[in-house]
Image (cartoon, rainbow, N blue to C red):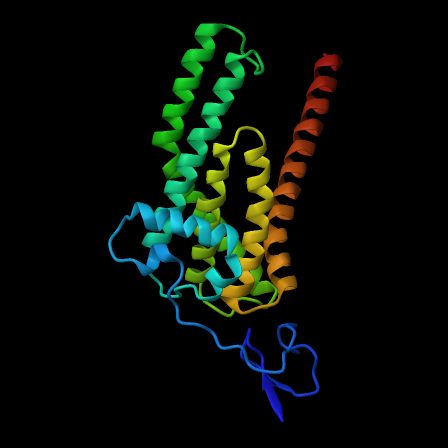
Length: 247
């Protein structure tokens, strides 16, 4: 007698407590996978719907398991791409606005009124007009890196589109937490990590551990690159100082 894993679809012996392929726990019955109708942003027709936008935020933030388990896995990326850009731009604008407010009350680095006023509005304009392009590049670059890491761990059972959509919806929804001053940005980071791990696990029908490693690897890689760059600068600076002293 065999049992089919409801995550990866691999047949296992009925005596196995966990799937030998993905490590997911095996229940007493196969859990059917629902139709690809989530999130609401993709289920609705049309390019933009304000009610659907807020419904999707709620789905991603509070029901990530259900949302990404039923993720629409077609290769069309535009709607997820649009959601990620809109959410990230709004979140970035609020984050910049709160920084300006803090500077207004002399809690920031600038104390001159004119510098604070001009700096705040200039930063806000940059966020509104420049950030969408930055987010667009970041979404594709990070999605590619995440999908590569997920492939290395053996957890990429679906295509690149599924990874991209998980990232786009997670980024767009959590970025909006920046509407809450100061602590919103911190909460967004930890909530993003949780949603990404849960989303990749459900969308790719893989184990939590493989999704966790796939999310942590890019972060570790970025930290390693930053550390290497900092060490290079320090060594170069020391060499420059020694050269100047030797003159």
